[in-house]
Length: 151
Image (cartoon, rainbow, N blue to C red; front, side, top):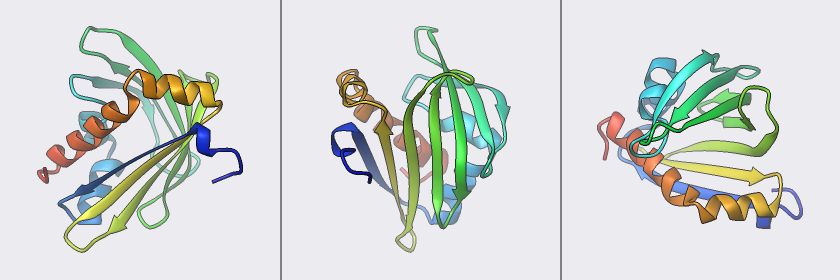
């Protein structure tokens, strides 16, 4: 973590009762990803997806009330051993609001998934935490576990 990032960082973790291969399959399949990504009650509408280093995912998250939240992930690393490194943008080619990572630790029949986001500013991190981003992120990991039948 870079110096001074502690007050801009949010980290989430969940152990999923499935091997890394099953977790990775759900994360790296474009059709699967849109089915589980996002908190409870949210859905995803993909505009463009290319899941690889140098690729991107342009999508809208749609809240339970119909509110549309445009998203754009730019992938720098995308592999099960090294994990996923990506930039989070506010909508297609919008301003960056965080750098994110997803790591998958092999625990045999289980996988520790660790998500970290380093926000552009400490204020943005606090705002995210204030609207429940930690809980919403944990719901997303819960949907991943349910999707692969491991919750």
